[in-house]
Length: 335
Image (cartoon, rainbow, N blue to C red; front, side, top):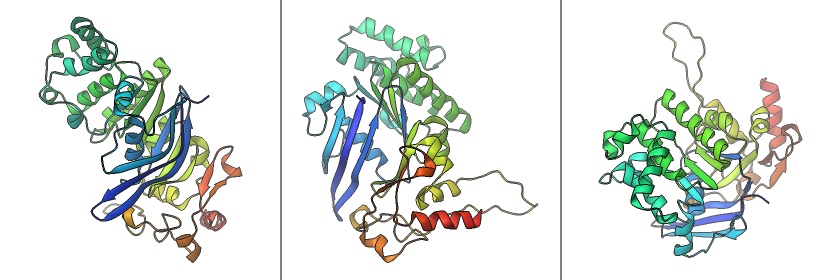
């Protein structure tokens, strides 16, 4: 039995511009020790999916479908029951550590807080555990810095502190939402390595959210590519990268900066995806990528594409596109 099973999860937002279906019927499962990557542009529904798992959706949001954690239904669960799960069985590393940490509380107290709330530890015991956690995540001279405030740490150190908080109670599921945002490349790699080591060490399941295909390729066992609130391609990471099928997935990969030899004075041009991301309140009835995709035909605007199994990508590799044959033929012609 999987640790986490999400079935037809939908999230509807009520905004001043109208009702928006921000997440539209996504499905996935996750087992202990497994890492699932969610990738896509800003506004595609990645973070809202994570917040739904945590029971932290904004008041104007309504979730439907099913989220089973070890067989327990989370959709519709009351606040008291969700509070017992958050920080205990489900931990989350938020995108921006400076806003995730309370600026007026010492970091030792913040890391110790979930231990006192969920495990019932006294102040001294919780502080001792907090120190061990900070040392494990690589905070230098942690004993001396327990009483420091968040602003006294670098961005990378603050991210390590939020990881320590998320792991304090040994959760079954860890959600890392863009955990390396605004960090330099060296620190990014250190943080991702740390998260991977801790997941393996503690036997947790990990959901890693990113807009960077490279991060997902190096760290996820399986992946979901999201656009306009829908999963447009999914499968084992290796299978998806070896046989990318959806035009959006290919567009994301092509838009990544690459180091290539160039002549003196020549400026390399990044590949871009045409058009702009549509507002969630005005998504097309069919494929959410219709109009931005170079393979768009009339049916793309009216027909919601079903998931199509892809033999070339291996078991479990699916893509939602009614023009997969045309996309594959164009790829072969340009190779």
